[in-house]
Image (tube, rainbow, N blue to C red; front, side, top):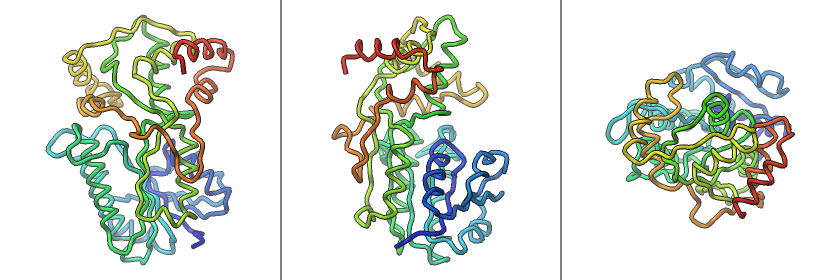
Length: 318
């Protein structure tokens, strides 16, 4: 089926912005709801994008947004959702109740195609509320009647403007040393363009219906290695003090009171399991995974640190 009109929920963030650009170049009409138009102003120049102020948690607003659409993409995800069992109120609202409302609105409007972004290692018995709520959201969309769903479960996403590597770049720029919680936590970062490419291609791939895809980059890293990399390429190498488990938990708790909540106790629990793809990395639809070192240097620096980047890669022996 040719999809001409697409509703993208949560489309103003890093992944949504890249995916919107990709789909717009294909001539797909995009409807992009946002609570505040200011947050999505960077998408206004896209020739096929319609940015609408709306509260997608309101079923009536969601029904109006759904009218005339051929498919839906749900990109909504939050990292700070409170505590509770099996997950906090914020996680429940964003990761479970919203997918329920999206599915109901799709069924009422006769829209049958859904792309849904979850998280790598999402599971009902995962150690964090974030991962447990993402698993519950997966169950909602995959179990919905008359909805052809594809679920994507990326590891941590990197790219220009990301809130991961750029966060550490800022910390290293301003701190004489860095106490690092969970220094041995493991990730397999995936480039935002790789994720956007997989999602866009899935719209024309019938074999993706009902499938779940884990998305990872080509190399695994510890958190310490990633922070060392950022320090190397930015020229802001700082002593890293790897915190033991108990102090990591206390730091995470303290960070909950910092504006923007850069880390939480729930994040600490998420990092207790490796965010790695079980079979290495084989992205769907023939997409070749891009190495972090090939991209991150271009937005972490002005490009003059390539020699430092090569030095890091040699030391990492990849």
